[in-house]
Length: 527
Image (tube, rainbow, N blue to C red; front, side, top):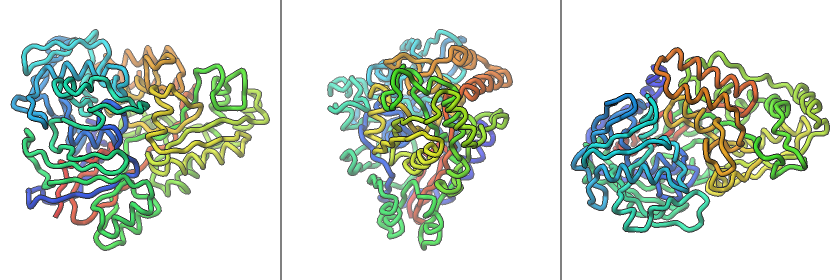
């Protein structure tokens, strides 16, 4: 665990008594909705955070983000390429079925199947060998010291329940017909799903049969999606809701000054960035025909230098953001300070566009969510305005995250030319960023599935492979820096900033605000 990260996560905890008192109902809201309950449908923090109260992985993360045992009591590397996990005995799924090794092997197969958005959680070449009912070996093709770093959100499903309900096929983000696992949940976690109306309301209830000791005192949790910032904040201030997030940066002062509420702020590990289609020979959404302007590094750099990141920080984010030169939080990479952003320079941007043959600019469609990240649509509007000053006309398509993700991700055929996205590495490690966002992929998404722009740099792929097996920290950081430098020099992405966390909480509630922006009910007590 990075020492800085440990300090951040720990200091974001809200002090309070953890002794169980009378059971309570917690009511909270988020700006986006919880759609499918299938834990493999969408690799998105809010969805995984919500379902992480119901489902569990072999590992989990503590309040300080350190890795600790979950459904596996312990693990060891018995051979360089063989990891052995000793499963927790006596654990039951919510329907009463026993948890065992068959469920782990089944979940590995399912997470790798068609429609899964979490296929990268387990290396594709891993072989699962069941030693006995409560011991599982993962056999690798080579050393992998971070095999389990993302397994807190690789949730284990009940093989029997999933099969009996004809829900083995994953309901992807683009599927219009939901199966049983998308509409119902059967995990091992501290809470059960009592009722679920996608986009309307989800009610969770305490799992009295949970294997661990409950530190929370919640009997019921009610989640309501509220896209309107004003409505969300008003519900908190009136006492209708106990917790809402995110709080608009302009409302932080009002929440703090209101009797009975407080705004919790702090750094988040998520990097917000812009991506460009660099694979197609002609963009889907542009007036440039017969060629793709984003395949020219001069155009990509022109876009970068046209963006006034300090203006976005001050006017859009109200200083609740940290401009970034690379695609990872500086808290997660020791050499992040060696990188600097290209300077904001509209004249240089115009010159680069002219040099690339676009002196008169061009038009391009831009996809953006309007209910996923802090001020996401406002950021896109600001970027569109800045690009207009250098001759680029942006046709902005901002829509709710359900439609947005269904369009731009692999399940939607990467239907985008220019887009905004946010990324928190599930492993809290640079390898995840390189492997998931920067390695080569084919048109169907095989390879690096979240490289929506489809650029391919064999050297980054080579470095990613080396980073995975390198156990010397200094050498590993050097390899990571080399890979990030290639991405920076070629402007494969336009990193913007790490957004800040802003949660609104009633003073009747004690909780932990983790730097990964996951809201875990097991850390909550209500007076």
